[in-house]
Image (cartoon, rainbow, N blue to C red; front, side):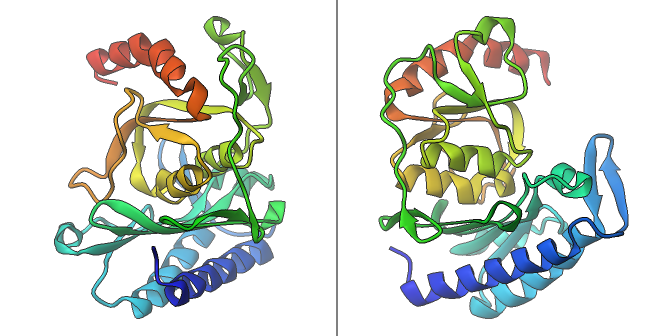
Length: 262
């Protein structure tokens, strides 16, 4: 279990970063695309610098992996690594929508030790520590007990024809927040079929797991972190009772995408 004093310090820093982001949300700030379809703004970079300075002061020997910092392979030799997304859901942040969050995770030997996810525009502060459970705004949360796949609630804007036996619910742009919705029993299933980065999912993965949700990559394999290539193909987060059905339904699609090299 994470050191409670360290966990509290990380929570305070994440909360401060969220407050800084909220204060500039809706204001006039520079924004651009790192690559087509991948937006970033100056607030992302400012928060990244603030979080790196504050978190590294807590653990000077830790490694660092962030969406907004060039990767340094030296992190692979570190027992502990900070995995950070200063603003997960930048598209919503830029558009003035509330579906964004500050995501901070501490990794130890490939596993998430502590997670903080702050979505101040939604008045949501998520916390989890390995073996210590998960909370939302200080209250313990638990994933649902749905065991029947048809009818499962999925955060999405539209369901493909093959999945219209499922039920669409609110979809924040932040994948971390969508995963956290399963932890809080506001959704039953979140699934992606693309290569995703560790910083997008690390904090939310622990929050979901500590709330009792099942979590894996798109093929049902366990997630690990601080890998040389810090990506995973897809993520599936669900109630335990439908996880196998989700993996089965998505298997052929995931296999086809991998075969096409996408």
